[in-house]
Length: 234
Image (cartoon, rainbow, N blue to C red):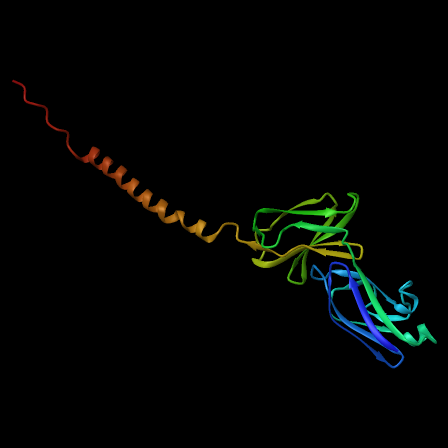
């Protein structure tokens, strides 16, 4: 059996493709590169023995629904059992379509930040408006707070607790059934920049000092300096 391969995933990249016979099976390995980290695809495989008319059935590995993008993907096809008495060259084709998320975060955007003690807004799109989903706050890969069940209005305001630890690896995550959608990372910063907190102190201190000197001097002159004598009368 002569083996060829043709892997098609629309608007994505398939890299490092290899196909080889292993006994009665054909092993296909490849890297599936998505547009977004963790993007998922529905993959099917076809072969040239029936002019790619029907998807292959005797497959296992990284094939089917919800295959996550990444390197070192592997499909194992029991070609002899499925083709039976077929002899000749064969081309295997893998087709994929990206799984569209029900919801997509718009805000927070990449590089944005929120300040402790202040409110920040979440914006998303998707769904029909009647759903509810669980909203979680993440730091790194850990869920640190459950923000509760949220109505799908497209908007949510989060008041950042003053005691929140500063950091640049925060994300929001929606959980809707088996679907989990994460926002872009954002930072949590102090309520006010340090420079803004400190800079007014010496300016006000100097201004207050000179104002105090002027007032005190006027009071001393008024209190302790005698008035000028009246001119003598004849």
